[in-house]
Length: 614
Ligand code: ADP
Ligand code: MG
Image (cartoon, rainbow, N blue to C red; front, top):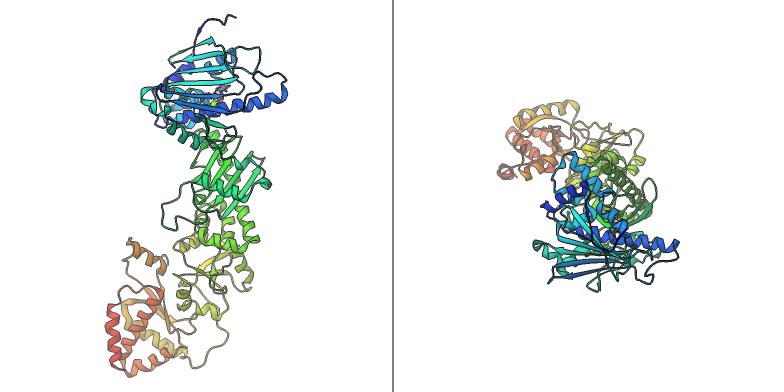
């Protein structure tokens, strides 16, 4: 084989097709070619390291295993050199002239499947070495193999159908790729621009990367190291770097798995929930790596939506570098990866909740809203998520919470449902009229303070076979109180009074009846509308959505045991005019407690009228 003179080769037909698309694409994120070339360099160094273990004789054996990147903005060139395995002449032909490797093949296949000229595919597939032609007028690859007997060569092409190979004297081991940039891509010969790209995609490449002589990648791929050897500060520094964060992480999960996929993951929960602070909705932020090279910084389909508060890194060597979300096979792989990570994270939270309940409670206060979102919407993980939820209750102290599991252990054998009340805070729920009937019967009620709670409870529906029931729902039936209190209105008088109240209050009430849930308060109002709780109505009103103006229909429940009702019963025949004012005032009071009074103006006028009689 004569190798002394330049020899011209035609690219394989598929490569021609590929190059044609790459060169003429208007794909905007051309910078990914740097990632592709650096990852090739890193692969070549990795291969050399293996070769060193098995081969005695290696050309240029004293060379550092490093990657040197140089920019020249005068000449508009970018050079990426590694001291890896390099390529022989035959390898240059095979590797850079034919399509033997997976990424580019898959790319062409996707194009064949109807994605013709879809520039976005380039970003998804990377298209490896050939992506250099997005920015290059010409590419020269100087290479010398580790095999001492093989001389050096230079491969060159302008990407238009053919390439040349000729001998090249004085080459070091490895490959040096020199890119002569197109005029409109001159930015890639600026040091600052390349630095930024290297920091983004290649920060964790394990071989040193020097840019114009200065080391760029000083942060290690912490997730691949042994947990026991990593200091707390290293984790924190890594978190800040990787998540672009300024706080310290609240929780950390560092794990690896071999089956069903090889995974190394390092996940963080930040100190604060920025969504809660009013910042924009979080974007997925667990970056996907394959052997330390970034595949996707914000993979959308990796983890479920409700895990968008997680930061960190997932690295799987089972992923192809140029993984695509489009092909079914790759999508299945991503799904599988996401499932494993989600499952592991849920297990971790469960352990945290048991082993460090106080820290977990703080986590829940900050991030519980995401768990609730998941419990309501992510059917696959609902059961585990519901177990992780925490609520204050009528039996906890202020600020302390309980799980649904613990609630169930406290339930009496009679109790079939789990009760909850939604309200703005503990004081509001405790001073409202709804709780007292449950208290008197020793029934625990969960307190829900967050806007989403009602929605979550409605979606979750049940826990451990017990229905989740709003304690202020009109349908709730409570067992009889043990002892009938003294001085209460008789059943007959109560019936007279409720009939009179219904007549007097007219359209404002759907129904008036005696209550089994009141102990001290004279009356309470229950929304007769099954599908809209008082809380939801308030929210709708605040958001000014449809439904805010649906006429309010309430059931008024009165307490025959209360002194007010006893007085009213006496007054309603003796002084009917005054009794009417009192009745209306009682209804308004009940509406206020329920958060249902829309307009307080008539009430003020009426109160003055009542006060005239003092
Ligand atoms: P992939 O990396 O997916 O195999 P590429 O298009 O990026 O596809 O590279 C094609 C092939 O060229 C590689 O598999 C490798 O054999 C060879 N190659 C590319 N860059 C280098 C390099 N810097 N050193 C040695 N071989 C290389
Ligand atoms: Mg590659």
